[in-house]
Length: 482
Image (cartoon, rainbow, N blue to C red; front, side, top):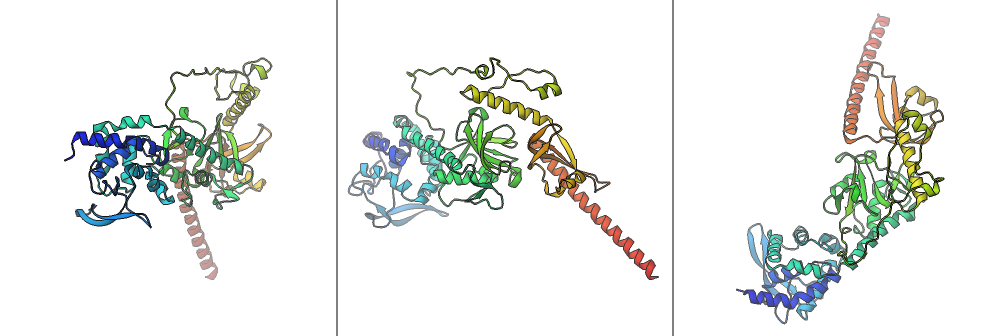
């Protein structure tokens, strides 16, 4: 039985080693120390003592030095004993220093332990170890947490320098944005040929950017918006729009029904702008957020990008002062829209934008006003109208965006098909409603269900009409034949 004094002596010995190991392995000192204590019997096991110095039960691979020893493994029938080759080290310091080799030595391990590496919450790190199959003991994470909390090992985690990791995360996020910027205006949008290098759709662009940045391993699956939703809580951490910052990801569409044209995704670029591969611009572009993300929209931060250095309370915080547009707007601190005034009358209001330059502020304000004007306009086109401009009603899909030109309003902008109307009494009457407002999730679900029901009823009606026509044809043939 190891005494409390022996445990404390062991921990005092390895403390500087596990704190130093963070810089290479990016595994929390509290977790490393708890693992070392539990797996080595607090330094008393034969494997942990000289000349082996193996604190973690690491198995040997290839030509690594080893010793063969019995060990307990967990299986369907409980614990059982096996003989295995275990790695040997020069000292405990050497063993802990080479911890990074275990977690980062191969691409497979980097990927397998990606939720352990860099995790700054010890409970999440221990659970990630268990989920990654590090140990066969089903209670492994619970055992580690108990040791960390009973001894107070979590206090060691405050002694590490996270600045290097912060820079790595920031670099990865910037690399992801770099992928988009390198292809901006050079690739085209396609859902059919989405795997590059000349065509991408919104989600394949995001996945390729994450792989390029090292956020996801090379060769990993190129998914869609539903795949991104499935990463919620593991790779993507939900955040509110008020928390959004450069490098965060948005995913839009009803969960469970966002695939194909029913969803959208991209990356927050800063200053209320997003960078995304989109149908409207036929490629990668930087646009404003309003009317371009899709709906309902969810915002996420890539796991690890929340890491920040401890706040320096002695430093002074520069006050952020609001700016206006007077200096670039003839001394006037507001803008107006004659078209909106004619439609709605004079109405006042304030809109805030996260910019530091007055010209940028005015530009975004004007774009926002234009978007409000577009959101008012909705107009209908019947199938016969579409035929006059060589457009096929059946090819214009619900919720897709098309370039609409209407000099009477005037409008020359990309607008959405927000409604498809059928007449059940007269199937020849078909109408499309164009607008710019994205549907809410409830509206989307109702419209989708309604259109599916109408499509079904139209098919039934067409079959009945065909059957009736066949009856008439047969009757005519009988009469003529008689």
